Length: 214
Ligand SMILES: [Zn+2]
Image 1 (cartoon, rainbow, N blue to C red):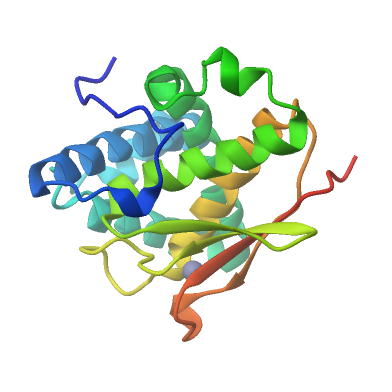
Image 2 (cartoon, rainbow, N blue to C red):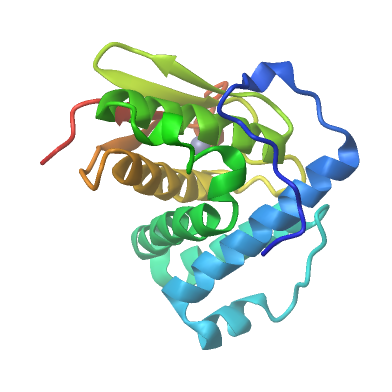
């Protein structure tokens, strides 16, 4: 169990918060630990040790260290293979994050659990947005677009990571896929990054279809 105390997000809006620098760094260190747990599950301990031999980051270095690992995966397995692995790490991150901090961020609340499915998925996205805001340090926003929700990150990758920002898109896609599937009672929602800062857009935008695929 992590020492970092996460706030309860279910009644919060991301823009309403301004975190002191030390909380931001503590949150990044915590997120990195969850990232490493996910990476260990997908890559195996031996490969993870091989890819991470040269870094033991603190909160300040965590975004760069995570990006370095993702770059290694892309170099080793190519854009498609590395991207697929990165997405799977993102999915695993959600499961570890849920176990470790699900209660603190409001995922175990009765009020959340009894919501009808579409609203539970939307609330889960809003909780995730607050959580990511507290890691990135810039607002992550959720928009209702009618047949889809969009998750907009104007500051992706987090400050401190190198320019290879497209690598985070696969991670976020996997994370959002697993979150929406969990909140939607095991159904699968299509998630795609439709605009990316690495390709010149002003924000990375992830579109989540409201209608599940199955
Ligand atoms: Zn992006």
